[in-house]
Image 1 (cartoon, helix red, strand yellow):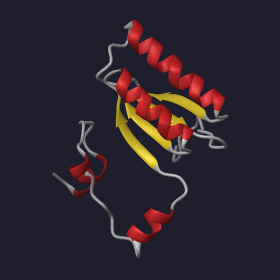
Image 2: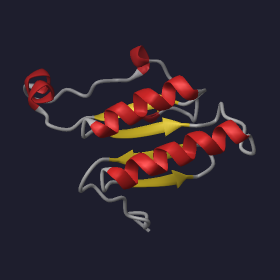
Image 3: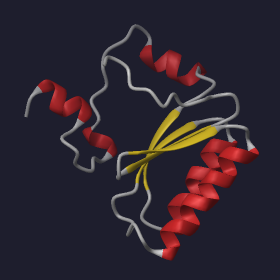
Length: 118
């Protein structure tokens, strides 16, 4: 596995231990002082949606893998509607990235619909 594969993964689900921390000066100190965090989540049911909603209400960004949900399932539609409502309530943003990820942001954080580096 190459260096970039370790960092971004090959489209596979990763555990917390599989993320590679890049060395930054005082990275631990900067992380503890950060006002906003980016969370990586996997939505496989209603419980995961609750954790995601809490994180967004707390002012954090969530990138959620939705590959474990069935695309035409009513539970999936309900979860996506709940997350859409949270983004609306906090004046944040929500987008579906491809078929497998949802990005939800808190108050004042918008998501560009244009890709960088065309």
